[in-house]
Length: 79
Image (cartoon, rainbow, N blue to C red; front, side, top):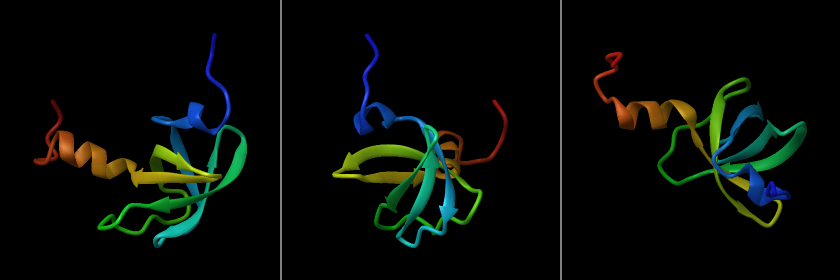
């Protein structure tokens, strides 16, 4: 049984289509969604990747995908 609906998008990647600063739009799961980045996150440009953190109504709450990589490996070295 697979989850469906906006909640099924949590943890999945999306691509910026309208710059997020903090609100914009992303493309995820074959559809264009309103999205918002969290406080303190850098703006996300067109074509940049984000990760879907949660869903508020029909708005995806996202964080920049590169921020996650930086947190895991702040030195930028490959493991």
